Length: 439
Image 1 (cartoon, rainbow, N blue to C red):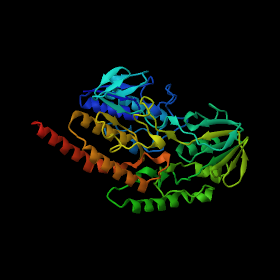
Image 2: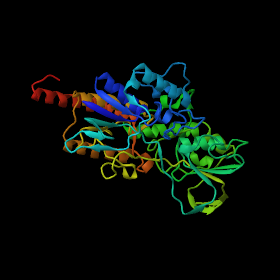
Image 3: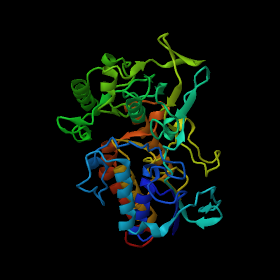
Image 4: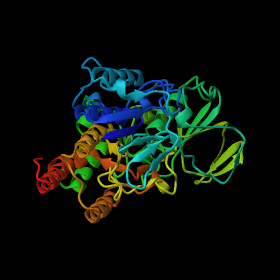
């Protein structure tokens, strides 16, 4: 068994460790000169979305890997430099760099007719895709034209780089974590002349701390209780600690609490309430040096920052082979494509509250699968399960492109550890028994 892994970010590192633990030969292809992916600030491969002031919005208790907890001396919400250092330590502690080919971007991965993969001319028995989904910026399309400067949040570094926003009128489009971080930073006195925050969908805003503790240690799902009831209780807590979005000029969200990734910020409501930033409706039209909003108001704008999410893309695949139109890709347990037993995706999900333990769990399952001690069901059952899981997704989450890969980590973990992993072990055992061997 030889395995090709694309990417050495969070998911790729978890994958490399899981394969190494199982003694499976593997090669990790990394376009950059170091590990870390999105958390490598200034990553020369252009894939990092980290900006200079970025602190993760998830607490270290929730980020930590089961196999490698975050250091006790780290703050509750680490800076990107601390996260990158931790990931580097993870790679060094487990000897993962030995299998990584740095500065090697995969140009083409092609599945062979009789199984296996050709990765830029090199043959492998299996392919694990860990290329992430926060690197291909998606821009909103509005009628009209804009004469000022534009940037996607993916390329934002600080208030002067790559665009000097000081003394300018800045419009931030979006209401996710990056949008409110940038709007909060730009709107501080002495930076932008005016700051506007435009949103179509609205968002439920949660502070980083609730009752003196990181909010994500208190607001989390119990998979054994009715999800709808828990979200109602969570919505009451959100209302208690943050109030109504409408009180700060924001639209009422077009989804219920936790049907989309909540916006975590302890500053944006203060900026709006202090008049440093002004909430606006969705953009209706671009008018050269002005912008008209859906409520009919018009504002002069010098810079537009599009914090409008990302496309899920796989540049190394032929689009006719595998693609994700409208950010949708149907996978069994968010990992396996029916009919392609030698292809695995790891970390391709927007897990609430964070991707770190999600990627670690998927990587361990992937390694069990490739080692032959966990088996997939038949294709027909896989497709039935995909349909059932997607129906549950549609029921509990917003269906917009930004949220198509969203899932509740605690529900996913419970499903995998209590049902799917034991069932796969039984399937593998039955296969071994049929072959006259022990599992």
